[in-house]
Amino acid sequence: MKDPVLLTGLVQKAQQANQDVQQYFSTLSFHQLNWRPAPLAWSIGQCLDHLVVSDLHYFPTLKQIAAGQYEMKPWEKWNPLRGIFGKMLVLSMQEQPKKKYRAPRIFLPEEQPIQPVNLLERFTKHQESLVGYLQAFHRTDLDQIQITSPASRLVTYSLRHALIVLLQHQYRHINQARRVENHADFPRPGES
Picture 1 (tube, rainbow, N blue to C red):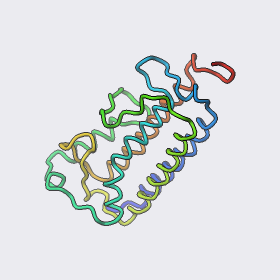
Picture 2: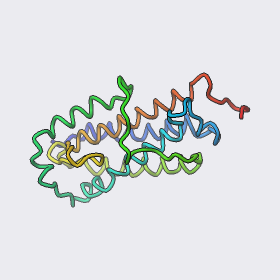
Picture 3: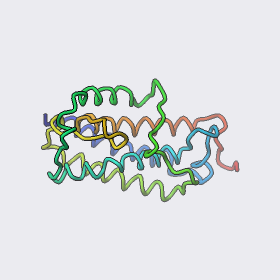
Picture 4: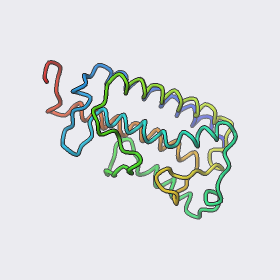
């Protein structure tokens, strides 16, 4: 089904995510951006890098769909669990997590320290691309098109579910980055 109302809302959410990232994190120092609340916890920079890294795995498929060149594979057409996977993913990838999940290896952020300017520029360009794809889908049947998860060739779901999850996932990690910034031990200006 075509759903211009959903897509308009997702476009606004993607644009707002970019504004929020710039507002909350653009003044952070290198040290603040790379500070971790615990050895295995992610820094703010890693939260944002993870969003770019994970979404980029979807972009080739989104680009093909936007250009009208996407052809579903047989498994995407006939996977008997495709509706279940999408609904499960939407429920599990809430903006305010009820449960923590381990990111698939291909979605992991950079382990090296992240430069603030490079990351924020990458995030903005990334969001502009995502908004462009979302705007291109206004005449697309979001339920008819099924895609394969970049993390597992066995998992397929509708374009509708994929897009909802992408935006929920963004706010899940923007919220995570905000929690890092609000941590009691987070380095404040003037601290090293």
